[in-house]
Amino acid sequence: MKVIVNVARILVGGLFIFSGLVKAIDPLGLTYKMQEFFEVWGRTAFLKGTMDVLGEYAFLFSVIMITLEVALGVALLVGWRKILTLRLLLLLVLFFTFLTSYVLFSGKIKACGCFGDCIPLTPIQTFTKDIILLLLVIILLRKKGYIEPLLKSSIPFVIVLVSVIATAWLQMHVVEHLPVTDCLPFKKGNNILELRKMPADAVPDKFDYIFIYEKNGEKKEFGMTALPDSTWKYVDRKQILIEAGKNNIPPINDFSLKMGEGDSTETILNKTHYYLFFIKTIDEAVVDRWQSVFRDVVKNAKQKNIPIYVVTSDTKGAEGFFNQVNNFDLPVYTTDATAIKTAARAVPTMYEMKGPIVQRKHSWADLDEFLK
View 1 (tube, rainbow, N blue to C red):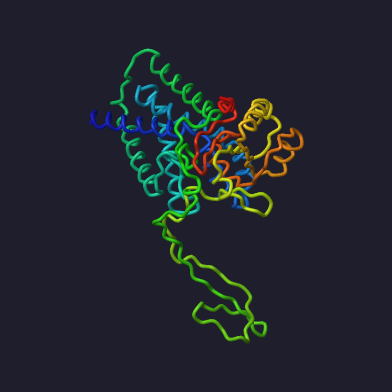
View 2 (cartoon, one colour):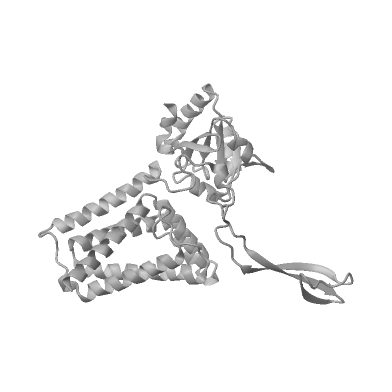
């Protein structure tokens, strides 16, 4: 039994550390996933106010959750405060099981983000993983007497404390400097135009349609193969999903470059050499930390005849800031806010592009890299 307990201890502790670190290299990924849960739950009338408030603290919850995962995994491996550690692990696994079961059985959220964007798992895989974890934690709780500290005195506590500090620091670092490992579709070397295309093996959704017609004040529904004669007046159409497709969403979805009514995506992404400056909205409280360097970058780019295109979800605010207040004289294009969240994990983020291929990208904290 001692061997079984120690194997379970290593599996649970190692998996929690791995799961936490995979998300720690991109904490905003978990933040956006939490916001997605809050938005879905907020569609229930009596929960809307609470979910809106919780959504505002999603980043804090993300940092705490990731740090807690790593700390509990380390604590289990070194044997620090085993009863407290195991109880917290049980609560955390129960919470994860609830989330993954909601994803699996409700169908309202496509993935739980348990291992971040680097290791995408299907809902059934994540739910199965949590059930196995739950069984292992229960075994550890029942046989906790076999769990012994690896080190004596206060060393286990110091190790746990160091893991907490290191995990928190890592998350703060990548929020400023972009993820350590980029697993997103906008990563260096990727072709944005190609990734906007539907996958070759995509299976489209299958729909049926019900048509509603009216005659003499009476409304009636008709199938596609049994439409009424011309004495009936068309009123409406219902679309019914018969069978969900598979792999039918492009890796880069909802990304476009629009100015007014025109779509310039293909035109810009086929240019020889240019920069894309992603900024969701203008936050006046923090522009001072990058504005001065950005001015130098703009000057340097114009000297080299490299165009800079501002990409935002707030055209009015960006036009005012870049071209009225600061006279940067830069074209401003609009894209979906969700696409910017994926493309720019730090706000703002700048890309160097050659054609549709990402050459490099840096956050606001490293804009001076574009001066080299």
